[in-house]
Length: 162
Image 1 (cartoon, rainbow, N blue to C red):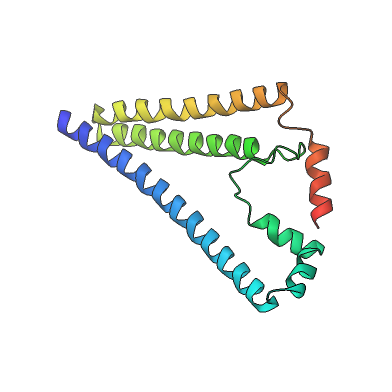
Image 2: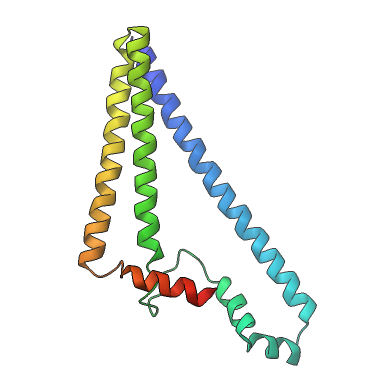
């Protein structure tokens, strides 16, 4: 009985680790391809006055801005609050996934009439509820500290970029 529970937890942690690795690999590959394409563009423009003229255009500034790290916060741009919004979305997503897995464990435990799956269901369900509570805390504190801005700021930035 103990071995099956330990194996189940090992499988869960292995799955979560694998999913995190896939996410990291995907982001890294996407960023690598983006930098490679931008480098080819700059190579075609060439050095000297042509490059300087290009970098002074709106497209050139956008290209330079795209080379900034997406994880680095832009302290001067107070309207940009994507980081906290993405944290909230990520926490809610993780919470829903964990609750779905917990529900699956409960269904299996009742279908098989084996109580070995109740403990992992409780653990994963607790993690899911914790993630959702963390998302609520992020939202409440982000609103209280003015970090989320208003919906009109987000809509305004969308219309400006299109």
